Length: 310
Length: 310
Image (cartoon, each protein chain N blue to C red):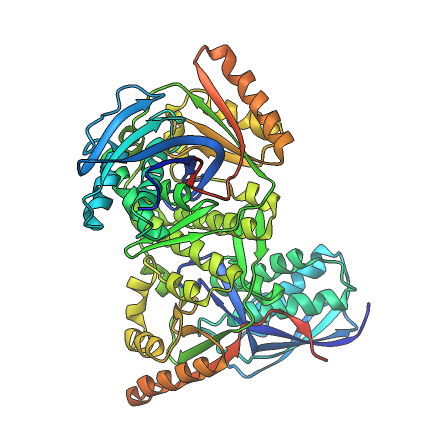
């Protein structure tokens, strides 16, 4: 045991990243959840409080952070007792990796409490168990960047192969979260199970362009590659003003973007903070007249993932 | 007019590159066609000789090099007369970009004769007209690397967006060309027009991994990413001994590979010449007992494309 109280921050993440459906994700800087863990006398996991969001379960088997902690204790064969407290900085159901942040934060924090028996890939694997609780499917495209930091590729699940890609230093993200409930399943049901080969080729051409753009720090290429011909055409209809948001953002100088995760948030990448702030303003101008409540986040892409803050 | 006789070499190319179906290609070093151009007195294009291959048309409208030259003269509004001679180093129908090499070589050579009015992207565009003559479709995945050199991405056709990717210096290729006729159309007919979304996601995960591997010079990641779940499963049945070739090559230390273009050639990438030579030997051992005639080429990946050699 290295410490008996640890506070961990885990960032919000944008998965899919337009052309990179189910394989790409990146973390935001300064937006995320906090997970506070303390040792307690009786073995097991106890969630003592959740701040900043309502209706999340305190039962550790049903709570994403709790489940992650339980799985880690089990695999480590530890009889440690862990008390957890969660401070949600990300709205559940926003498409900004809310459950992934709590899962990644828990994985990181519990590993510290246990004296770091697990490596980074293990932490992603445990955090995926949190995703399984949240959505029924152990996706890695949010938890991998939330744990590892930077633009992250899930190349394959079997075996799990996670690649930390390059993240250009001047890449900024503007995200608007319209306060609508949109279940992942609902958004997922809009996807066709079969797609034309021609469409798939277009998509992987753009995936290749995006990855090349990240390494070349070619912001224009990144922008040109942010085209989604697979999910966005059907999913975007669930997001009020999607087209208008995107058009206004591009007009304001944004490179490109689309649906954050499975929505309803919409993200735009920009070169530099100044443009990212212009995109924020453009988003506000589109959304204010609708009367729909919204939050906007402007952030550099984070090169670090979950980390101890206290 | 900068010169009145020019000899150009244009490399053989491997397109598709397993996971990069229809978007990726790379050139070989030292294997390719030669295109010799001379000015002549009467305007137009005349193909005076084709060495190294039989049955190719001398009519410039039906010959890939001739067609490229005609299109260039037309666009340049030039009344130059051009005599062409071709030395085929690549067997037509091998899957090693035979028509692309002749097209790229012609585009490069004619541009020199005309005093370089066209840029690199124009040359690819003209060479694509040669591909249209050869197969009915103006593909760019062979002609782009044949013109530009290095690992090349065709991100999109409309607009045409060509990206020169990174090519690790120690990346070698072993190609076996079984001397079987295999028409591109035949191979293309084996492809389904629709693919499962899940399959497509696997493929673009590998595309992203391959591109990242090229930039990171991570040979192991390159190898892990060389998986084709789209074309290879159906197309490879047309190639005798495909599985055996691949297994023997991996056993010999090769990173990975698959069908070259639409076949019947099979390529394997290796780190370093020594391993590439071991793969050559493994190929020989698999193919010698079959009685099928074959050629094997071992080459570093070329970072340069079409170029003047005389």
